Image (cartoon, rainbow, N blue to C red; front, side, top):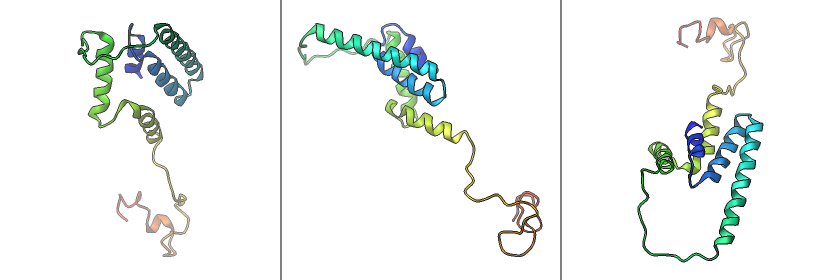
Length: 144
C-alpha cells in the first residue's frame, strides 16, 4: 500500500489512474469505504482528463524509433521498483488484488473442517474412552 501511495503522490507519474483504482480496491478490501470512494472519484476525474486530452490531440502518428526511459524520473523508478518487487516473487502487478485477498484470508488463521471434540466427549476414534484419555494430542505432548 505504501508503494502505491508513493507512486500515486509522485508528480508526473504515468499510470496515476490505474494506481488510484488499485488503491480503491485495497481500501474496499480493508473496509475503508470513505477512502475507497475518494480514490474512485479521483480515478474517474483522471479518466475524464485523459479522454479529453486524447480527443483534443487528434490522431497520433506511430513512430518506429524509440527511446529508453530516463530512470532518474522518480515516477519511473517507483513503477520499476514496484514491478520488480512483485516480479521477484514470481508475480505480475496485475495479480496484486488476488495476492492481497489471499494474504488477508491467510492471516485469519486455519479453518477447521471438522467439529471440535470436547475433552470429556467420547473419542471420535470409536474406542469408547473419553477424548482426553485417548487421542487428546495436547495432553499427550503432541503424540497420538
